[in-house]
Length: 438
Length: 101
Image 1: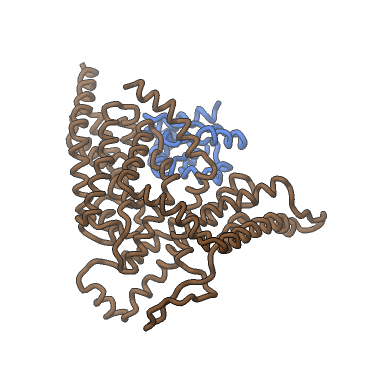
Image 2: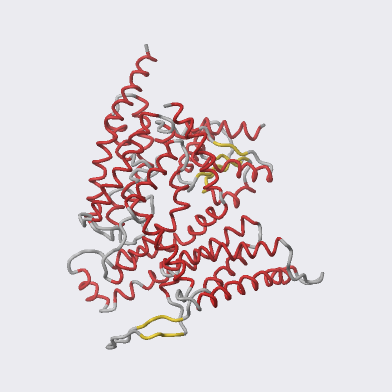
């Protein structure tokens, strides 16, 4: 077993380091973070708009008028629906930082490239008409949100790569000495920006002559939809959870590494649910970011919340008790490094077993619960991962008590899985402590 | 003495910061200790005398060590056991040793 963890350490550490340190993935993860505060703020309005109480919509309409919901959702549109724009800027900015070229310029060019790839028309069905008509002179808001996320990601990276390549090759317009530095700086960006825009323009013209019509359709059909289907399946979720747990078993931040790859897929899935909710449709996705953050990783990666409770209330050994008291506070907010490193779970063949099994089991129970309709799916609300259990389940499902109930069931399941291992581990600790005192 | 800590989100290291501050106070050491997420480290390195890295992001160590070298400050990973038990006194000692050497 010691050999097993040694192999993990030797084989996984370099791979994990490469994945997490890979500059494009890092820029992707760090850039998307820029959308998070906005989306969380939008979520607050979303929750207020869709509280599932009887008579609530009528009550709100009585006070604020019939258009109350439309008006309440203005901030939701201004946060969620420009997700791709913000992410595109953020990713380009972070990537440019890596290359030590002007990040602000790279961000601006990336946004411009993204808009250039987006068609300036939308389909609109006028009241009373049966057929939609094409309306020009607009940016389709749907494509600036999660639907355009992958296009924005790709263009952010391509445009920044092109930008820094040209700058680093020093193919820039040089101003004579005496020109103010900020002026000459803007000229330095001019030529590479022109090349980027030219390239994206040519790509758009090219695609307009194919049956795809837009870059959004190409990326959607060839990348976003297949990836979404894969990452959104039960098998996909189980594989992701397994890798998160395996990495954590060696003491590496699994969620951060796996999330760097899977984050965009789950974010897009989250937002697809939000779009369906506001349109009054059936929610399409079971597997979203909140599916993991709120329903699986209760108490932190490994679903250690019940384990912390056991240490606190049921332990015989002093080590377990002390650790329980230390871990329960952060555990309420789903932070469990005290447990993973303090128990320790890391490189501990006994505790690694429930640490991997419990989240896998919860993935299955939650998936079954949500796909059969026993529990509500996550409502596209971006609840922060630090939201305590029970409250988290209630909020993530758009204020539904059955979301909290699903979490209670998951707590019971994780309790059952951790309990026998906790007993063995606690007994070992107790015997060591007794032996040490004699 | 300015001690910078980092982990994935800067959350669990901030637990340790509180314990280290208590330990510093008890030993009468003047220290500014703060925690940030790994992607914010760049913006904080100039103010730091030492960078301590949470064991869960130790895969970033080669990269962060390089950055530390550029700024001339020591960078190292925190002992996992001290990290897990939130042993502020031990981690403070570790930081002081790194600065000293």
